[in-house]
Length: 406
Image (cartoon, one colour):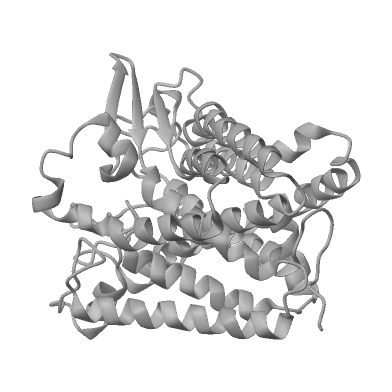
């Protein structure tokens, strides 16, 4: 029987490599948020939204679309890692750890990551994104951990495959509009005022992501010691291909699984294809989850047993995801500040109306080539820091408890 490749404490190479790959791709989307300049032609703004089929370009669309794979794969693998962690802990220990770590991640989102996004020390805008959704989902998983495995699997399936029922007016009538309902499911960048000077922006509703984490937790059983690697690779391929086929089937039927159906586009066949794969992320639709998690399973199958310089490179980021995630926001925004003053902007332009990001005027930035150049720069700058922190964490995680929270 081929042994599973495990490195460090509860580490599995293929999971770390895939996690690292999506973390690197994720940075592209955040660099685009900060650095992509809106194209202006004849006084009209073009390409204002990367997935707006009336104005985008194929290159801009795919720059955004490829990053769709990051959040669902990361949340799914967070669930899998929780299962593997549970192989070394009692139910009580695992439950306590997941609940405490979940609450800690909510604090990180509000206090640390929001500041990295905005560079606003007064926290006039607090942004609830993927880390807060992971935190709440970990907390819920910690509560559900005492249930039988099949019960957790069933709850995950019901949420992931059934949550799009809430898109139908006949079902959601009377549910939408409140703070609680937006935190759970309906938020589409919903804004709530805390007081006259402070507000909360809800980007990620947590319920669908909780379903993803529960299924990821159950998926982790495939990576238990003693599972035949050849069998696991075959199952991963079959599950991944099955989810992609399910996406194609649901998408062609065009009736359930995504609130925005695809349609023939007046700009031609290319944009009709883009409409077909233009799936809803906020909240993540069933179509969105099928294609992204299905693709992730195929990659896990391909990565099984492979180790070379390329996988070693991505593994570093995958072993220290929180460290990388926090640092990359501050590095990107620091580069924004440098370019802001280098391009001749003044202090009076630091704040832009209706934009929570400081140092980001509407006409600031580069074309798409410039975005890719900054992205590569960010990834390469962070590599030695992540490598050094990974070494430090590996040497100290057994006797410095706080490292498990970072």
